[in-house]
Length: 477
Image (cartoon, rainbow, N blue to C red; front, side):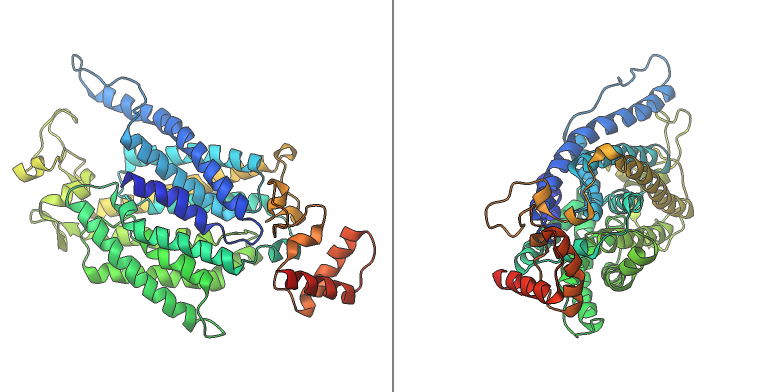
């Protein structure tokens, strides 16, 4: 399963960002670089915050008992945690792709890993909410961190930058391959953080949620389309929303119909987000989401938080109140609900059955179902607060002149930072209108291009000449 997570982070997510006609090199290449940096930096930041957990444990142990040393724990668990941090980085990168320089993205990545580790440590030490698939700690966190940075970097862009984002048939197929990679591997991604029976439940619940989400995404894409056709943008992204929506509750005891229902809800919020919420955010909230990350990660992540809150609130077993009987696995799913220890918190005894002891259950905090549900919502709140706060700080630092922020006309263009082969459709950086090769045949597009083409040639250019250049470019494409 470790390899599955690696493929999800480095292959599937990178391909999902490769839809832009003239920004494929940067989308995949910079995603690769930032994830590689995040793996190493997150190992350090997580280790530093783990010192707080070690200090807490040492304070609870009586004198004479060996105490754990202050050391970084390097192993499979720490590498998986670093992969999860890299996943949050690539989610935020999707919001900003095409609009930041490598130096800006480096600063954004370094700050995000610090904030991510702080949020994770807060959950481990205090909240103890359940989120094995990272719906709140990865997807919601990465989305709103990226949106906060986007808000800080916002400026009124020319329409030329919007035009160059248009995908080609080939780039759409590349993204679809990424979607299929992620769709197949998502159950493993959600199930990696749990064990015993919880792992089987996580796989099964994610399996049915993603199946229903795919079905609903296809249906809604056509029903809500003015042309009564499928949108590739919806299929590439919304079909994955079911995996995000199950991340926080995938290992909980859910009936198959509940997993199917959650998957359908994720499809609804994702497709509706594409059609209505994203345009509103860009028009009214001055927040540009380059890859529509909010619709794939942010909104379904909130759905997952709500579903996990409800599922935690109705969980119980024969000796406690609850609508769903977890039997001996209640405390493996919700460790904080295990009975409190008598005497020392770490060394004392608590009332556990032999079966629970065999499953590795230890003394907890004695929480009720309602209390655990409240902590699930608290994790959503802390993820939003830390991500937005950290994103605003990173965005303000990224506005400094030394950050080499690309000009409007250089956004979504590989020419600025990459050496392109001769004849590549990325264009020649000395010829500013070469990067605008797209299916532009309307009079409005010609009018929009006229002042840009005039500026690049140094002489006035009429609409007729602009139309001829556009036609020539389209023929070459």
